[in-house]
Length: 95
Image (cartoon, rainbow, N blue to C red; front, side, top):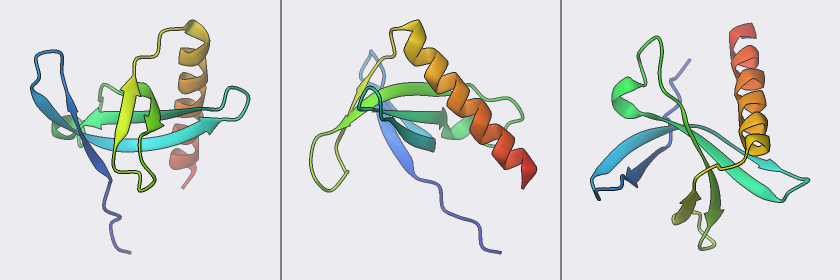
């Protein structure tokens, strides 16, 4: 079985420093027509416990190369993301 290459993105922090992140998953919420992305820092990707970052995103162009990331502000949005994280983690543990 070949290892699947994970998608990676670069996200600048508030100081303009760029950090490399590994994409865990993306998903869309039909009710709100919003898209979300969950990422982990590449340097933490192999650790037992990692800090997961989640953002709402919009694609700027048709070839998916340019994303605009937005912080998740509302508790409702966080609940959606956490529920999705738990669901995907459960699915991965079953495999």
